[in-house]
Structures are given as C-alpha cells and as structure tokens.
Length: 326
Image (cartoon, rainbow, N blue to C red):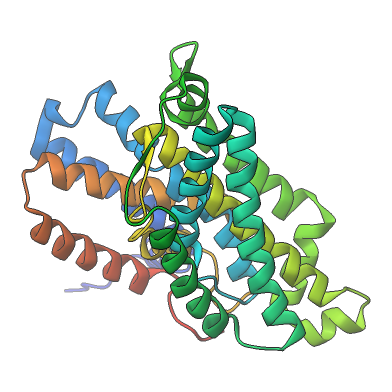
C-alpha cells in the first residue's frame, strides 16, 4: 500500500512550513490568549468593560513601548524608564500643587523625562559608555530622587482638567487613555517608517560605522532617541498620575520588564536595525490581557507572577528576535 502523501499535499505543507510564523508570534499569541480566557471565563471576560479595561490599562506600557522600539532599533537599551515614570509623575504632581496649572505640571513632568534621557545620551555619546551600564546607573539615581523628593509620601492629584486629560476623561464615549494609545501608535509608525529620522535610526542600528561614513550624525541620533525614550517614560508617568489621581515613588517599578517583553515579542530586534510599532502595541495589549485575565481568574499575586513569567518566556523564545544573535 502506498502511504505517501500526494505531491500537492506535500507542496502545500512545504509552503506552510516556509511561512514566516515567527514574525506572527505576537498576533497568534494574542488570539490564543483571548480565546483561552473567553472559553474559561465566559461572559466574565467577554464584555465591553473588560475589553476597555485591557486597552486602558495597557496605555502606559504602550506609550513607553514607542520609545523603547526606537532605542532597541538603535541597538541600545534604556533600563531607566521605570524610574523615570515615578520621578516624572511626582514632579508633575508637586508642580500642580504649587502652580495650580495643569499644563505647567505636564511640561514639568515631560521636562524631567527629557533631562533624564539627555543625561543618558550624554554619557553614552560623549564618554562612549555602554547604554546598559549608563541606564542601570541612572535607574538607581532616578529611583533615589523619586524617594527623596517627597520623603516616600504619595502626592494626590485633584485638578479636574489634569485628571480628565491624562486619565479619566472620555471623548464621544471613548476613554481618553484609549485615544492616547492610538495616538502613540500612529506617531510611532510615522516617526519610524515615514520620516528620514526613523530610517537613520535603523541605519545606525544595522551598522553604526557604515551610517557614520554615509554622513549620518550617529551621536546626534543616539542623543535624540534617548531624549525621546525619557519623554515617553515621563508621559507614561503623567498618565499614571491622571488615571490614579495621584503619584508615588512606586509607580513604574515593574514596567521596564513588561515594556521590554512587549517590544521584543512584538518583533523588534534587541541587536538593532529592526523595529515594529504595531507589534509593540499589540505586545502591550498582550501583556495587559494576560494580567487582567489572570486577575479575573482569581489567581493570587504570586500565582499571577509565575504564570505571567512562563507565558513571557515562551513568547520570547518563539519570537524571531528573542535572542541576541543576528
């Protein structure tokens, strides 16, 4: 008996095997996670409130993911974003209390992030130090400043305009945080794919020496990207302050790993030269869906951390850019 598969079937299998499955890991994983929680939790998960909460709770991670995509595309890393979240939120909250002007507070918070990013960029470009070591140092420095600035005390945010713009508002029934997420995605895509600046980032990430020979000011690109990373982390901190109606030094403590996981699983190469904004945003939604689903399932905090860690390890292992090799 001939048990061989027909040639057409073999050809179809071969074509399917050659498809870039790893490039679609985050999208496939998102569908699987949604289906799993939909089946196991039923209407508890499948409702408008849950879906809105998943999106709004991913906003801060999504905003930081935009800056992190640029940093990783450059072939660098920024470990200070979590600490910058806390410091920027506290500076904004303290400034709001002092001035009673929401826009002054927002500018103060953003300026804080820009300064942290500029310090990182200066040490990396001027002294040629590795970004890992520089941002590791500033992570501790900024965390200490966050604890010192208010003596470990939380700062309430009660200004209604600030809260509406940066967390609690809605436009035509759409939560303002969802609009921030969409805006971050569109801006990130525009910068990375439609602007010369984005092309230069990818060129530096691919080969900095060749980029310099071609006339690209490599140090200027590096400095600009780290300032942008600081700004996105600061904006995330301001959004936390608006959403939670307060700021504290613990904000952003665990965000760095979530952001890096979302960006890498989303398809951005840690070695530089390749970045995807859409994948990063879907990655942030992926992380938020897991967190919210595990919460609804009634798992303890310890159990949630274990399951979340296992899922992230699997997703990163399957990602085409989860390893350090080119």
